[in-house]
Length: 613
Image (tube, rainbow, N blue to C red; front, side, top):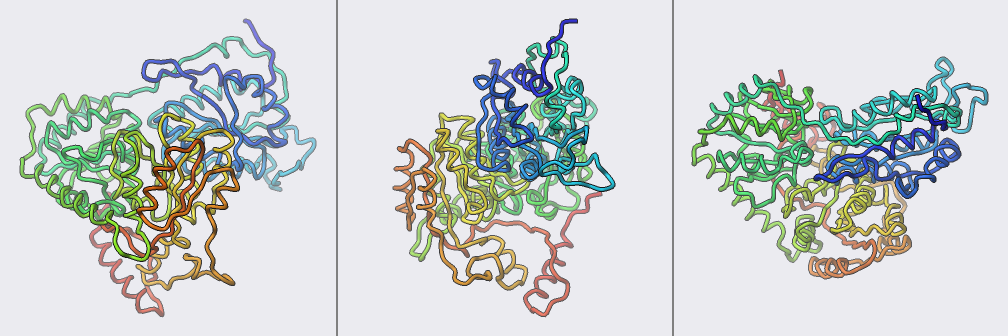
């Protein structure tokens, strides 16, 4: 057997650069690059291996390990899970910084390969710098904290182990049912060891993402349930996009006259003006979709895990509504007594469509969906229209940015008030042009994820919409994007703190406290000069005060040659309506009358919840 003598770190890198994938008929690197900050756990061995392949596997250095991993996720999402960025760090805090990002990838079913340095297997120099010691468990390191947020986890304790471990990690990240973060821990002493690896291990391999077909009996049961429907509804989730099933789902809706709503992750699987589109559903949804959902007797849920913001904490649907769930993951397909169809969305929809011939929804139901959407569209037009108010609203700001966005421009958001406002007001002009991370709702994803998305496709504008709260948590990749030349347009919506949580606090009877800056324990509240801050990181920046000025600034931003930041002060108390119920804990007893009233209101709403068993 032919062998090649390499260190474990060299062998790992050589394996990764020889993995490829077919995208739209073209062979591309499966791992097009890595984000990394080097420290003593990865700078001597892993970086020595990476520099040898810097033309094939470039390393991009961000300013924080968490934001780099988030940038990798933003890249992977923009590529529809078909290419996978790597994130690497040293041991200790560099590694633990990436745990939050792993949670983002895990909850959103997104692939990322996380490689972190680790302590010494031989334990001779223990305790080493940044090592957290467990007295009764000496083999544990901080990297064990990745286990709850990893789909695949391994620590390499012998150089030969990567021969079995790396193919399993790749298979996990490419599996539609099991997709998520893969973590590999690299102890410092194991990285340096030379080993005679089989040459066959490094032979180029071209991958294709599998499309598992569902069991024919599952398809038959789904067809039977759908054909009995009088008022069916389709919910398109993120799985529609990742399976590239947009066209067949849209056609299915048209062929049978079925109204179709979208989840936050699924938004962008349809263009806004699709004939049967009824808008976003759930807590941050539209009155149109929520009204249709309340009457629906059969719900075809495609590629969604049916989280509480989609289901209105399970109050959006009638108690006897039948779910038919198509999902690559059995765990998700089985939820809420669903007729489960376990398989890839595209091939499952092909099978489903073939068996539905002759079926047609009553025209009155199709018309009701269209009428509801017309009412919603008219309402949103009103929320977008500037008024004489002292400050612009979210609806007006999102509306202007949406109007100025090009057909292919890609919008990124994540946390605070913007996800709801983007979900309601943003009208998608082309497929897969919308990324609002709401599986983990990670504050700080916005700028980092935008950097990754801009890197993934520099032929379109990447527009990041971020609140002042999220911006202050993580903004340093503005500097990264200027350094690397990956332009973004960043809109900072400054409402003086965490306004959406203040809204929830007040809505549930609580006194405003510790959310808006003016309500925090501060000596004196003042506004950050976001323009100067962005300029100090090399970006171009402009502050505006009105919607008209915002429009002019967006025109300017489209002409610039680097990341451009626009800051606008806005109203912290005006929101676009359309919400469904969201179940949160409310104190059952309180000294505040408002809290007691909210608790009673919450208890009444919970009576409407659908039982999951």
